[in-house]
Image 1: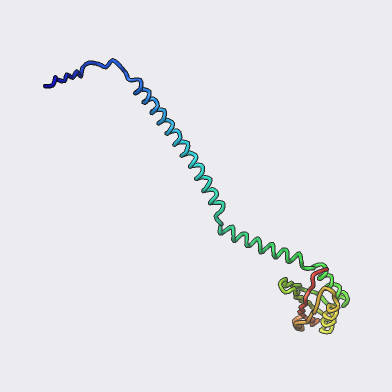
Image 2: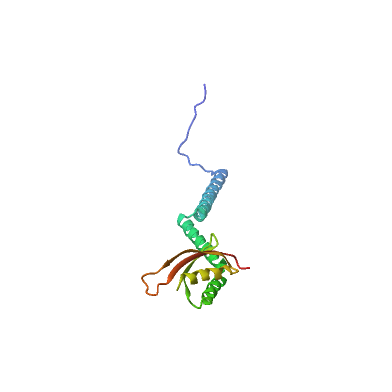
Length: 175
């Protein structure tokens, strides 16, 4: 037969295992390092997400900004066209032709058409013959090409009965 097994649960242990405590310490240090690494990575990830969101907002086209930019571009184009129009020479030719008629012809309005390089002039003269002479004088201009009398009408509401006329001509860019 076998000898009986004797178990003593009351007797205290006298030895502490050094190897177990060493492994416990290494485990605690490793767990703490893992928690600190996770926190560092989480903060870095949050910073990158904020930078990505800011970049997405900056790169997303703003519809109101597009409309505003289109309006500014149209205004800039109109300004550039106005600057290209040879206003000084054109107005000087119109005024010179008016002075050649001894002040009997007055220019009332000048409207440019930049796309077609045309100018529309409204004027008033004492007689139709003076209006025709004004148009013929403008035909001799170097800047205004092909001025033509479009229409004329005698103003019956005025006692002096002046003639209102409209003419159109092409302008050349100043050279």
